[in-house]
Image (cartoon, rainbow, N blue to C red; front, top):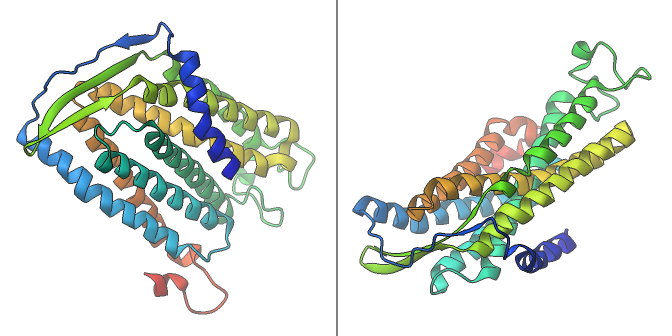
Length: 312
């Protein structure tokens, strides 16, 4: 995983050299001044100094709660939260301590934190659903789909219907992940005032190369790899396929998310930042909700005491 972080941190420079002169790039730079309403200025301040600190601290709190958990899904969620915490701190550093929040390395690490967080969270969700609900990979438990499939690979030499469908999902994901590649790139930059302070909003091309070129290719390759591993390995490679599929969800989700908020609000980046921060806040609240609502199962111990009652 450390090697993955290093590789992903170095690749954008190469991607920049390859794609910088691509014809899809459209110049739409606005270096002039664009006024922001009082409501927009208040929204910008609230997201930067209220919402972001709250969900960043909550992510670290979740990490600490899960620190000693040994269950695979909880360990994955623990790493999801620490990557999220690290990524958001890189984002905050770029916002607070740089002139125009344009230190590329900090933004790369912010993006990497989000990608890795989404990937680990997806794997935690898949493992949790499998362990507590479906029992697809547990050989000693009956799969919840067995009544629907009529024949089960656990008891008969037949193909698994769920695995066959997951192969289709992987191939479909590999195609859908390429969607951002056809989007034009727009260099957006303008000045505004936030509560009397001059501030520059920008989203340069080099960020978009990372978000709309590199991540889609990465996600597509991982989705395809997950499908092929499951196709040729079947039940013996299901766990590996799940890990690679979850790894694909990270860049896939982040790329599509940035595509939506950037193209929806590129003429007013105040709202791009606002809805990105709000969505991340909802993401952390969703994690907390899942852990709380299902705490008696998720934090189940052999002793009569419930660790969730102690923690929460």
